[in-house]
Image 1 (tube, helix red, strand yellow):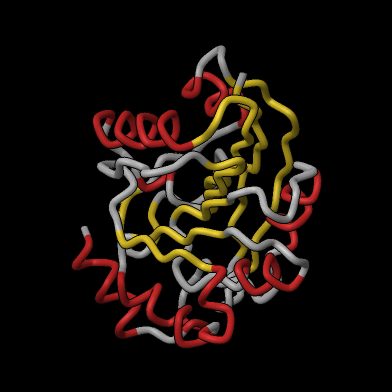
Image 2 (cartoon, one colour):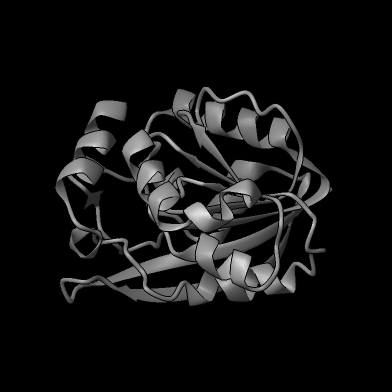
Length: 201
């Protein structure tokens, strides 16, 4: 799996990646609604080369971790934001086997969970989420919506509605809000996403 994503980020420019967003508006809106302090720890899971980190630093957040399976992706971000590297922790890891070394106030995931088609990989993700997100912390997740693409980057995906995500997480997670986003890819295709924000009990 790591070889697949390293190859993607080594061979493709940012505007050739279907998930690229120049302005991660939905992420920023939901993060704003979390009402975090600027020193509260945030982890962006599957960060890739996302521009979200630029916006978070720009509004004053000072403790942001970027996790991705691809070192190539995080190296690109490092090159782009070397001026603020003291505020960014880079974590090269497969989230399904990751053992967080600290607790976070916010876990943000745009388009990782839907790649986990096997139950054991989803369980590994949930184990990491439970270990890494503090009680009372918030979980923002975006997946392909029902009726959305069946594959991405050549890999199969699982599509979710809000009820599916709530059932996956269980009763200890309180759904705070749901949004739908029609993401326009750099190539001009529309991909429907389900966005949810949960609070851990």
